[in-house]
Image (tube, rainbow, N blue to C red; front, side, top):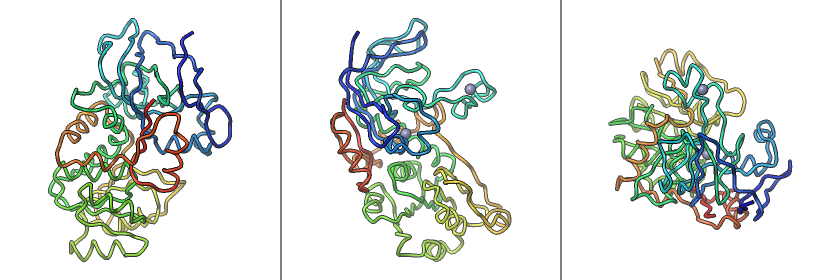
Length: 345
Ligand SMILES: [Zn+2]
Ligand SMILES: [Zn+2]
């Protein structure tokens, strides 16, 4: 049996295990086998590493995790025609069923029976991953593997920006984690008039500037609503929230202009109290929820953004580590180092 190295979540406790004796995964008729060249660490992977409730509710152990990856196709299943050996691909994380109402109406990204790579099925913190050919996005030659591994999280940022209709608008982006930072770059490329980034960490706001934010606000020290209202006179045209934090969401609604758009991407913990009369109804606000990436409109947009000189991809990458150094990469994230951490198998 062919073996490979990988990071295994083997026990229901904090941490994970680096192994060199994992079986190379089987390839089903509709699957492809990819030799992983770069894989980024996601918030979801932090949940898995820390074995939070999110992970406990969804995972069956042992499981290789990791899902933001790029690599080379080395084998394809008997029924796969759209991808071939030698193609360079990045992976969509959401595995749609192709059978439900949403899948059949071209909304596979909100499939009713969604499975997630690296949560429900073996992931990419390994030399090889086997996954459905439906989830392969072929990348162009000029894109290197590290950049391509950022496309999955970038897609979440891009999807929010796309729904925000940001062109020529005063845009406020809440949250400068990796996805928020990438979203700032996307909003820049998509022609936002001004971009205001809000966070509570100065290190992250400094990177927001590098991504093209015109204004940064540390909402721990400053009143973001007051600043945006004073600057615009009537409020922000578009607010996109990548935090899920209820204080941020309420501030976002309070600074939104009448007739403005509020895009919600960050996941709140439980319920959020909102003054709907004043925050939404009297304002005639448009409120849009966004999840994942549209397959594959968002991916094409990301590729366009990655090729733009306006997008500072290097600033989105916080560090590059060997796969076996994953503990260091997780430590860097937990200590608040901005940007995406990438592992190289
Ligand atoms: Zn992710
Ligand atoms: Zn479906």
